[in-house]
Structures are given as C-alpha cells and as structure tokens.
Image (cartoon, rainbow over all chains, first blue to last red; front, top):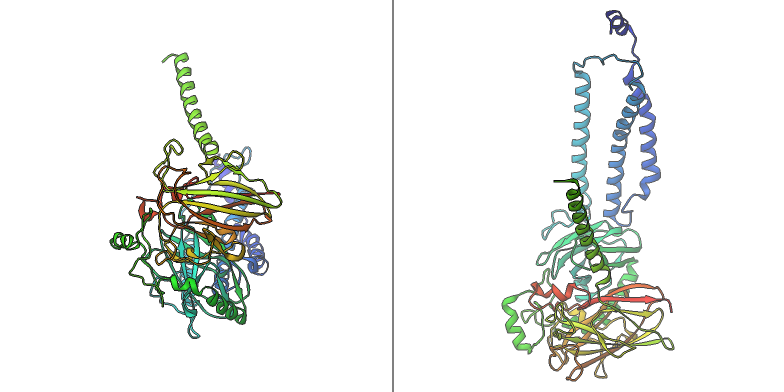
Length: 312
Length: 224
C-alpha cells in the first residue's frame, strides 16, 4: 500500500456498522421473541398439566425469550461480517489496528452480567415459589405448598416397575398412579433395590428414587388426563421399559377409585409391611434367620423380613 | 519395513479388527436364545414352562448354576432353554408353570397379588389363588411371571423341593396355571420375574435377573 493509498483509505467514510447491525438485529430479535412467546411457548415442554409443569414451561419460555436475542445478535453479526468485511479480490490492505473500545467493553460486560445475575435470581425465585418446582427435595423439604394437607403418594421403585402406596387410604399398594385434579400431591419417592428416578413427565415431577432414602416432591395437577411415567436413571437391562401411564381424574372419581381399590386390595394390604417412608429389604443380618424360620430353600437376596410384621 | 511387508501387516490388522467386529455383532444378533413359536388353535394356545434352581451343564453350558426358566416346545415336546416365545394376537393363552425351585419370598408383597389373568386368578395344583404372602403361607412362592405391559402378574408356587439338573422331568414339582388374553396390538412384551433370585449377586438382582434366557424374556405378539 502506498502512502497515497493510505491517506485515501483514512479519508474513506465508514458507515456506522454498529447502527446497521442493530437495525438488522432488532426486528429479528423482536420477531423471534414474539414467535417464541405466543406461538411456540404454549407448546413448550412439559406442558401445563400441573402447577410445577406450568412453572417449568414458563421458565423455559423466559429462558428462550432471553436467549433468542443473544443468538440472533451473534448470527446477525456473523453474517454481517461475512458480507461486509469479507476479503475482496485485489484488496491487500491490512485491517485497521484495534486499540480497544471502553464503551463496547463496558456495555458488553454490563449486559451479560445483568442477564446472568438476573437469570440466577429468576431461577432461584422460580425454584422456591412453586414449592420446589416438582423436583425431589430430599427427606426434609424446605419448600412446601400452602393450602393444607397434601395427598400423600409413595412411589416405590424396583427393577423394573413403579408401584404406589396411598397411606391416607389404608396404605394399599397398586401399580396404578391415579391423582385428583386441583389438590396438592406429595410424592414420597424411594427404591427397593438400585437407584431409579421417578419422572412424571406431564406433571413436571422428577425425583431420584434411592434405596433407604425418602425423596419428597410436590405438585398440584391442574388438568385431567394421562401422565407418562418413566424411569430417568439407568437402572438395568429393562430400564428403557420401566414406563407406565398414570391418570389425573376429578376429585369424586379419585375418591371412588381410592375407596374401591382399598377394598379390592384389602387382602394384599394385609401382607404389606407397615407403611414407612423407607424400607430395608436388604437386612442381611436378618436374612439367615428369616430363611430358617420360613424354611426357605430357594435362591435370593434380601426381603421384607420378620422385622416388618404383617398388618393387622 | 518393505512395502509388501507393510501392506501385509496392514491387511492382517484390518482383518483382525473386522473379524472382531463381525464376531461381536454376530454374537449379539445371532447368539441369543431361540424363540419358541406357539401357533393358535381355535384362538387358544397352551404354553408350558418350568423353573429350575439350576441346570444340567449340558443343557445350559453358559451358566448352569443360575436359576432359570425353560419353555416346552409345542412341536417336539423338548424343553428349550429360552425365555423368548411367540404367540398370536388376541388369543387366549393357557399357561402352565412347573415349579422345580424352592421357596423365595417376594421383595415387595405386591407381587404376591395375581393380576391381569382371566378372572384375576391363578391355580396352584387346581386350587384358585388370588393373593399369596411370601412369608405366611399357606402357599410359598418361588418366582413370579409378570408382563408389566399387560399389568399381568402371577406368583409361581414353590416346588416341594429343588431340582438342580434342569430341565427336570421326573421329580416332584408344583403346578401353577392361569390364562390371559394376548393384546390386539402386535409387538414385543417383556416379561420378568420380580423375585430377586440371582443367588450370590448383590441383593439377588444380578446374573439371571439381568439376562434374557433365565429370569426375563420377551413375549412376541404377532398377527393371528
């Protein structure tokens, strides 16, 4: 480049690239956010079947609305750079030296910090406000729903099926998950063997099922319908098949179901161990004695032993 | 190294890797237990199985010490070491399970409840049974036959003793019978035992409990 060219170059009037990028980005970001919130949003997983699911859907929509402008800016800038600042044939000129730009740096750090800190606060509030957001809170939950006592449903995982006990209805145990609409539900999740995870997708509930541990999760079904339940923790050969379908029904229908099931399973309930938040079917110290008492001759591991007398 | 030597070494290495891959794929695709096909007659089929505490090494060379199911071939009458069987859709299956294993209670007593069978009942030696306690009798059980996809569960009565040379034919055994309808929907329905009966494995959950051909399998439902 000759000195004359350099002088000519410095005298060339550069367009306001920042403004141009902004004006391209703004309608794209606005359109993306409007589409996400009003068109895509109502269909975002996991739906709005329960309080926790609705809360999660709201969170995902907010995150998407926040993320879309950022992504649109990155793409807009990239495409603009490719189009406007691409190398052209015969142009051997070096780019101008960069000396930093305090205004851009401050703006960048401020905006990204505000986004990250804002989302941190938002996420914390969204975890607390809907009573744990449907996640397992351990055996001493910090966040509980208001509005009186919740329906207790114990989820018992075993390879490879979930079963459910209803302690407020005599403690019967069934393979069916039936819940009333409009009532708070407290899931007490545990396991009899390995680690599973109870994932009631439409309810927005996911809680690990650990042997010897009670993991509590709350939700409130707000619509009737079917619930897909699946295990979300690799738990053995048939993990992928550890699925069931539950239902949310009206309160009268639930009461009727619970009453009839309680009667129907009365004989089975008498054989169950007393209701407990956890069970220890692996008491090896009891095993030999139990096998002797029962005259057992077969193979096996640990089971509900004599320490769990039958119910009256 | 000369060029021919390098080509030869490369060829040998390639063949070794390819051979290994083919062996592994063939082992998994072709090495599994066979499927016993039950054809319907008048909309009904009869399936006969047996359970054994352990097996004759000549019948089950891989794991003769494992507890296992066997299925009786409807064609030859031979006992086949498998847990895969095929039945027509929308067909009544009459199941007979001969119990040659001793008693082991269920880990969760819900599996002592008969469900999903016709009339929600099973028969121990002809006597109707709906709920069995694994601990308190009057019946003792050894395994369960459960198809979760059909909500079917049947506790299998314990045998009077154990047979350690399965498949067994000339020893005392229990007889558990029940019937159920296959669904109209064709496909693969897994079945399993819910009694953790993998002796010497942690909590009884390993070995035969995790291996097709022993305490779990598939019921393939095909068009009738």
